[in-house]
Image (cartoon, rainbow, N blue to C red; front, side, top):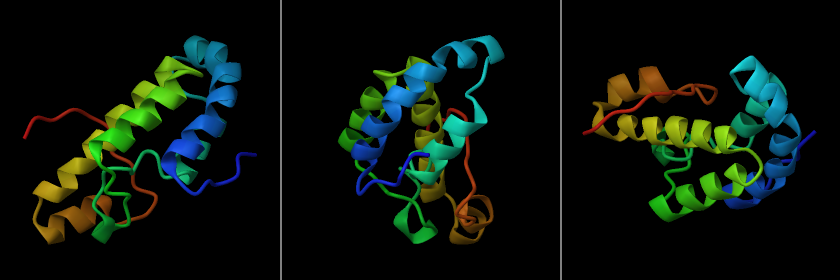
Length: 117
């Protein structure tokens, strides 16, 4: 089990070896194993860019990039998944508070996708 770390970068560095171990399984299944995805979610990496008011990390771009890079050293697919989900969380900052809360207010909510504001 991966223990939670003080920062996203520390969490990403700690998760990278396990991501590397699971890379073959990820490739075969064409998705991250639940164990890894759950650990990424528990570390808050998927919600790094969700505003703090909604329980996210509201991380600056440099921190996001450092986390993605650290995790991708283990498995590029895991890093890519964090990048897609974390940046999708920025959408919450552009929505009215009511709608942002509906989509991102649940601490377990993870969004994935690409948008261009």
